[in-house]
Length: 281
Image 1 (cartoon, helix red, strand yellow):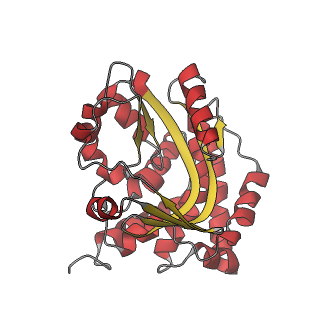
Image 2: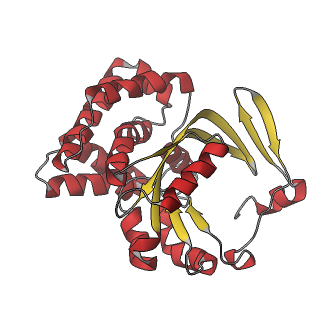
């Protein structure tokens, strides 16, 4: 752990709030550095893609001869980056559909438990990824095994691109506002259709029903603030390139125009480069 380490060690617990109430996870095995842990079977990478420069130093001490690396990072490009550092054969990918906000040191609120999609970066399912699916299943995390990880990544962008992006670009609005405001909902839907078209350029079919489903599962989350908005308001670097920039570039490479995403990406680049909460002027 990083910033929360002292608080979690002193309390020896992590607190989780959800619709069922409050749960305490204890005891907690928390460490200050990967060298304190040593080689493991699987490394779960939950870093923001903006922290990728730290990946080598954080991951290398955890690697044994057969250690797998499961990246749970957003957007596009994380699989390739980690594969370039540690070898493609180690890389597994995970797509996390969960609505969770950190409330304080060692304390989180779960708006929606969601699910986790798992797959091999290169090739179809293997025994090691099936074993991971079994572990996630026993942990009640709703895992799903996919044949094609990249298709699953494009599907997640259907939600991430509009909701994370508009929450920042429209002045710090939560997802319930985006769904209830006719103008914002129409813009979100239009962005989703652009992602649908871009995915089709790579041979992936995202049905209209999947787009409609996003407007059914999101409102029950309530006033949920997407992770990119949380980072923006805290003055942290936002994953602009992995979530918006890289999909835009890849779509252009296939001759697919995404004018709404192009405009949103430009707005986010400008907003995230300028003065904002948490960042000294």
